[in-house]
Image (cartoon, rainbow, N blue to C red; front, side, top):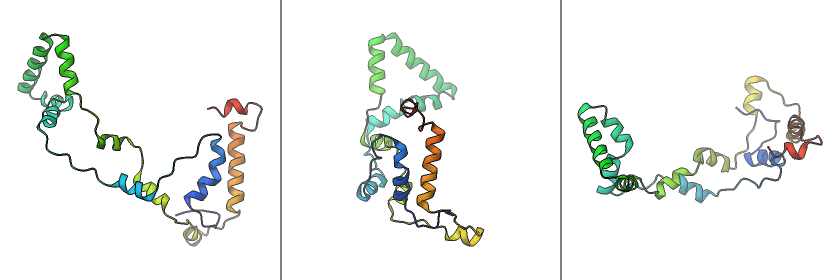
Length: 172
């Protein structure tokens, strides 16, 4: 249920009204529908790879789970000791070998984007308060423009941005 000032608003309208509070920061990057669809697509299934499977078996997560069994705990301990006996150069080489290399799907997952929310915001939906009026008897008292202006004034006042210390305060 949206409670607005009885004027249909999009997320773009809200962002435009609050943008002055971001100071000198650059605007948030936009994203087009085609790029969003590409990001939302499930990653391609990786091809079967014996090397990747062996690396997975040797990963610390799998070894940790296997060490719960006494036999595998002894095997893991023996292998660690054998590598340790071979010296730090071999130990470092094995450690580097077992480290996974970055791949496209991990890079894609590193993008912190809520695809569902972004898709909702890209729609040209105008939010209205009809339901709040109907169910709650809500009656807007102000226009959206005056509400946003009051919010901006309040925000600036609470942050101390309307004081001589404003340049220092805006840095945080």
